[in-house]
Length: 218
Ligand code: FE
Image 1 (tube, protein in one colour):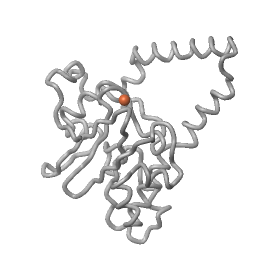
Image 2: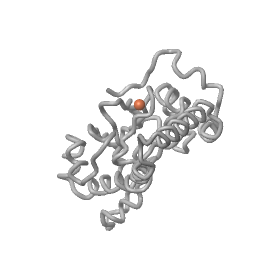
Image 3: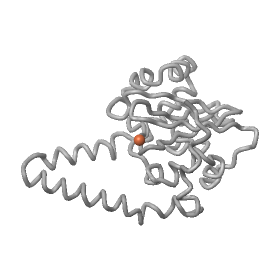
């Protein structure tokens, strides 16, 4: 369900952090630093006890860092822009349409694609934690996981988008989609004007990760 409001107290804690909340928090977030230390300690312990193979771990990390990523989502978007039948399927059953392009796996089991139009702009978030469509967008950026974005984008989406450099006209409706463990969202940006002659491969190069999160137009 689209949400434009959250309980009155959500997000107020980070209000006063202001415009620098996104750009700096990944360097200094004590929660994230603590978690990283605990993960490293656990990994060392499990390797030392022979419970996990460090090479297997590396290959998992390698997969999510290099083999999946926003290029997958960009290919999906470009195909939707050039193939009306695929686009209809994608909006109707995002999971099946995305799987048909070979993009399937953990955190991509149930996908819904929401389309930007002349009158509606969509943004995705996970207010609870950091649910994100890994199979099409790769790993989430640090700000997506940060509490400033998660709490503020539902309360004041226009202000948050402005901080990303996206100024939306007042008559454009902003829809914020709250991802869950069961359902992940991806934004289908509008195809830019003047791109009629471009191939799907060329169009894919225009699409960015932030465009598919909704914090940018493309
Ligand atoms: Fe989450």
